[in-house]
Image (cartoon, rainbow, N blue to C red; front, side, top):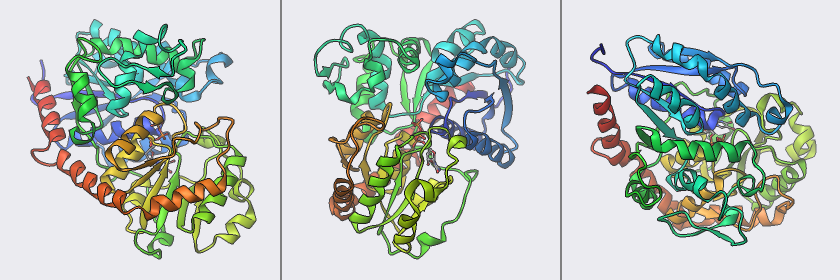
Length: 455
Ligand code: BUP
């Protein structure tokens, strides 16, 4: 017997880029009178995740936390490949712990919402419990078209000699936009996970996505018309998720002293390891651009491994020489606060989808330099909607090519001087706010979803 207010459980994926949208979604559900339980895999991969979770649950005591204590994965072949993908493997191996955990939740659940990277692990569990399962896709709809169709091309298009990939119902895309590990002849964690999860998603009860109609209607229509995958459940755009109060904050007095729109913010997200050689060229480029900059430097994929002193990474002389003009940091910043700051006029970004959503929300133009995974698909969206420009001739992160400082400086200068992008970014900001406001397309999608759970 269900009580009046639906009770929904959320199971996020690993890494801040997957956790953040789940937490923002949880807050928006709670504000609409939905009871929310978040199942948090334990331990988390990064410190950022564990600190954010403890801050979140102390800020929102009405949201329940249930820990899923993961069985360890000991094989080096798995853990060394990528700790964030290895976490999905650990959750898969611990999935027998889910049925008792879910069945004991009270009041009984109306639905379980799961990260896309857990579809093949969780859907069999929810089917056995006759519990509706929804997938929250934390990237762009453009990426979703690849994610759900890749399994059908893995043994043909992905391995043939053509330079293009034909996603059904979409214009062909260059193969170079697809992460190299998906095109590899052998299976790796990312390739296995995308194939298995993309295939299984057809059996979910619905796919929710952190995007909005006016920027991605083409992909959303193709997905919902059955052109990409016949029989795919409904894809409902409910984004962009606005930020919430729980996010950890460190006020940046330095920004307050900078002229309006003069600073370029530089960050490659929470899980990009950049070589020291590339870091030094980037520093050189930022100086050459002649713009003020706020640069978040990361050298390692997982934050607790990133132990080297800032001066050692970028050079003590560099820090001294840019004083007043640029600020270089290594610790976690509240990115939302930075995007919202009047001094920030551009964003050199790896194109993690949350970072782009935040840029859209605040109307900040983007220079796209995708590094890994879904980021070229997301960079396509940046360029297509006129949010900014994409440095297409720069390699994926970690590739052989090191992008030189003069090239970086030139492109950053172009970004910061481009008036058209500024105007368009402000238009997108308005569209984003309209989408989640009363009567907006994403708000309608959310209300319909909640009504389904209330039945
Ligand atoms: Br780093 C960093 N502060 O210092 P993405 C990140 N963030 O608030 P990613 C901070 O983490 P995936 C910091 O605002 C965004 O919400 C940022 O997610 C926040 O990229 C989130 O942009 C990062 O999606 O994850 O971390 O590469 O590739 O999984 O999307």
